Length: 148
Ligand code: CA2
Image 1 (cartoon, helix red, strand yellow):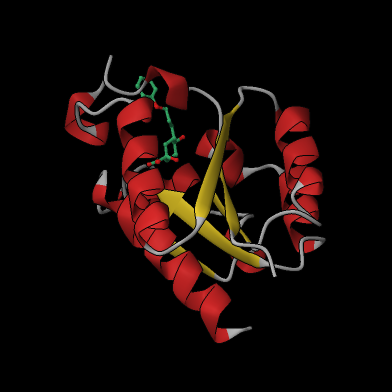
Image 2: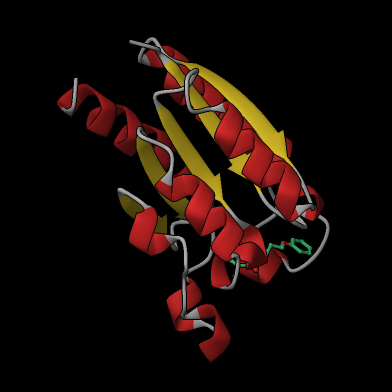
């Protein structure tokens, strides 16, 4: 069994902390990754992180995790709402998948209410701000532990 978790961050999340603090807070992506890594380490797991603004790079990263990682935690950014390529890649991943959003897309514009990722996720953590990174890693590890 592997004790590695892959955290994936989609488009524009590299800009966190620089704009729209009322929606996304003031923490940077590095801050969130640090919290996720500390949470994983405390439970004996290793965390790898990749951010990309490109759909194909995220698909490749999901494929690459198939034999190396027990879980994927993914904030797909706007790809959440229309990327069937990411949906299909996650469907081919045998491990745990946690969908993560800083904001609650369901309380925002109608086009954000659709997630094409949710149907292939083990579960979703939305609307808890930066704390979601801790909650998502805890949920991923709990789920991995329950299935091993
Ligand atoms: O709430 C989330 O985590 C989202 O995944 C964030 C995405 C959005 O498209 C999803 O509907 C919900 C957008 C991330 C863009 O973040 C920015 C941060 C600062 C400046 C510009 C964009």
